[in-house]
Length: 214
View 1 (cartoon, rainbow, N blue to C red):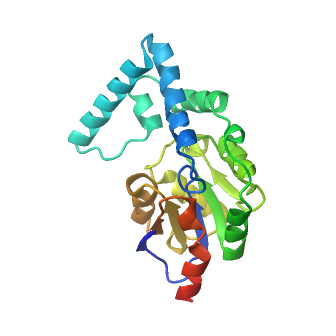
View 2 (cartoon, helix red, strand yellow; view 1 turned 60 degrees about the vertical axis):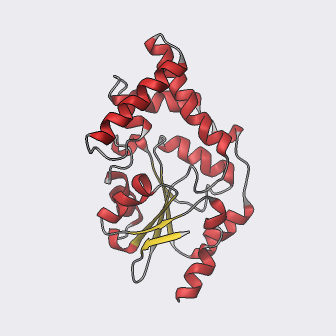
View 3 (cartoon, rainbow, N blue to C red; view 1 turned 180 degrees about the vertical axis):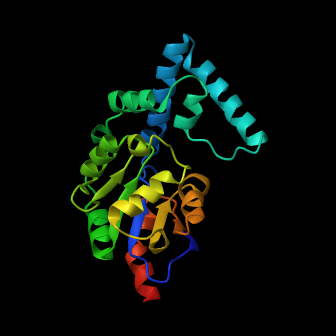
């Protein structure tokens, strides 16, 4: 776990989902692969060819100083708008087939005594299904998804909306995620705190971390 910034008195955590609230490499990879396969069908080419084209475009963006690019934003360059991306994700991805309840995580988050929001690049409904699969449906009360702002992280808009829905100033929030460029940098730009994790194992340690700062 790496702490990039912290508010003096945090009131809320804005949580990433994939790679943060669960550690399941196969499911994380599946989500990318199944969407690339769908785009390949639309383009009439193999998934391998589509993946190569996407990676080339990602490299072009990096070379031009464009910074990190989510898969949803990358798809826009190939004629797949955000609304279509939302529809594909709802059709093709079901976290309930991959994830099971995590009582330890539920207890960890409940014990923090902070407002909790999920900020995901998947549609909000998919985020809610994922939370339910992990047994967190009644613990994480706010979900901001791709279809709420029609903007994909690292756009800061989802973070601003999550803070607003929690009724908390951005400066009183901490973003928790596994990718600095995508999950943390946009939150830091809004004046939020940021904690980088390597997976759910780091999230389990948050109560002890905050207790040590009390």
